[in-house]
Image (cartoon, rainbow, N blue to C red; front, top):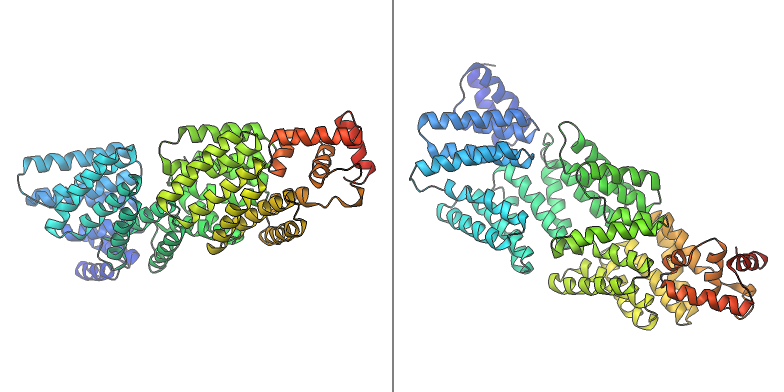
Length: 545
């Protein structure tokens, strides 16, 4: 193949979005002749999309120099901008800052009015957004959007409106923010946007949907991202993130084995040389599935790997420690991350686990405050998943406060919402609490039906820890309930005989530690016992253990 043929075929492959072929053909031509700026830009894009980052950087740097040689300052700035953005995405902030500074200097020296001035507003806006300076971020993105509209530049319009959407969501104007993100996605799915930017927008919008618990929208855009990735078999960036999103949705829908497989594929892809920080999210997702299945050693290992890649192992690690009976470690871990959470979106993802741990350590006041925060967030975001989380937390706290009658309504609302979202594990957990509330109200038939339904769901999912906890709280006292013990006192006696502390019993039965102490005192009085060892002996003699 001669140089001219390689160039023609490379351009045609690029237009077909056959990135691997385009890279090979344009690289071949580059060995024989000096590529024009347009072909260098094509080579840079194709190289980036097949994971050849250094080749992409080199092509963009050469395109930048060629533009300067030709006196095309605006295009040189554009090349410097994209090179800086690629470096920023890889965490090479010093080099990224250098290229952005060069681009800014070139525009200062050139008075022309050009769309690139809008592009250079974007990095500062992004920094403001992630630093929590939301008003400044909103203002800079708005200015960039005005420039994009004036020049009718699809890429700048998409980037700036995406940033505006993120800013509005974090400012509490969720509906307006989501509407902007949906508008941006129309441009993406219509093929109006620069290929590299397409993948960035997909991932950013899905992240934003997950932040506000909009699981249906996240699922819809994840499906679209999957189609986009599948249409480009040689695509390397974004495919790992796509697998993580798919794993999270699969886990929610109860397909735990499939979720684990996707998360493992993502981890292998993202942690390979040179490695991407988002690999931490892949390992965290693996750890979550292992935790739910009771695979403690594997869960601990993958939480550790997540941490090594920069992803906090919380709140999952705290829930793992709670399941292991290490309540002090669980409490310390979850309190720290909640205290450190800088914004309400970050807190919202931690508070459900915080409520669970606080109830286990008998800090009902803290659990109530967290449940109240979740209710406020659910009202602000109006997302079905967050409403279900908030209702579940409210019901659990009411049950721990000794008000099972009031607990039933929010728990039933939570269960219905989880079923609507096709989330079988969370629905089963709600049914456990409903069953315990019914049992406390003396409605044994309803309690049995709720607990049996939860047991079947846990068995189908392979949720071994939940099955064990359910077995501990749902055994019928039977004919050996002598001495006038209530069914709850028999449950407490059985757990005392198993060597459980009052705190551990409270965690298993979803009641306060003070309530457990009262039950233990009643047991000793009714059975004329004076110690836990005597209670243990009684339990063995009467077949409780």
